[in-house]
Image (cartoon, rainbow, N blue to C red; front, side, top):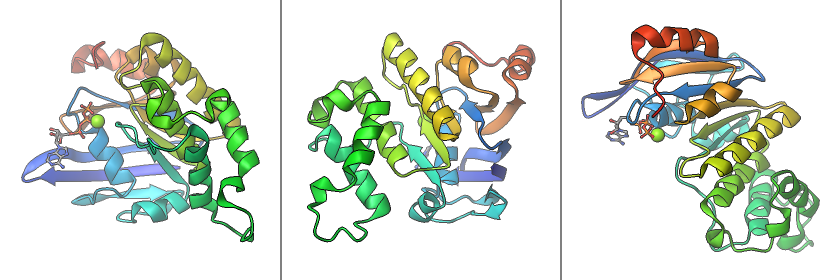
Length: 244
Ligand SMILES: Nc1ncnc2c1ncn2[C@@H]1O[C@H](COP(=O)(O)OP(=O)(O)OP(=O)(O)O)[C@@H](O)[C@H]1O
Ligand SMILES: [Mg+2]
């Protein structure tokens, strides 16, 4: 579904992503791992059009999308979440998800329906599957960190992506929140036939749900393949470490 070829990005001469190539098969759950500063977020930003690459190509479903801006990629089915949450803190949980539906699908022919009633069923259904339905009326900014990250996942899903890039979906979560969130992501990906690419520091999480793992180190790919192959490779590349 996604082919990344020879992507390179430098910041003032510092090469953050260096000739990175890998594939994400359709309907797969794939992970990018590597220590802090390995270039994971930069790579995501290159794929989603938030940063422009120096060289290389991003191919989505056989189509060259290198340099396509984020909103166009979003319309082409590329969704993402951010390492730091990106929710509307002053809106309620319900309003957050509903706003995402409105922004994605527009008002349509419902010119006389009050905005707050648009996409009500879709919003409630998504909140249900995120297990946030009983918190629909709560102000998002007051949710726990874990619930905020789940809500952000909801905002990404409301845009109905085919491929979803999650940058550290469990960052800052407790062990139990992490486990819950990963189960949730895994279930949602299956239910919706999503292709998933995520970064994660918790190796237990990565090896439990990823079918394919790409290891980045100092901007370069040092291993790429099935969890078993990457684990076996760990011996001589010194990776992956428990504290990534
Ligand atoms: N806008 C920027 N300007 C200059 N340097 C940058 C910029 N963005 C990232 N870098 C540098 O590029 C390198 C890769 O950063 P990046 O954020 O992609 O790493 P990461 O793998 O996501 O790390 P983490 O696990 O901490 O999130 C780092 O050395 C970082 O300092
Ligand atoms: Mg990062």
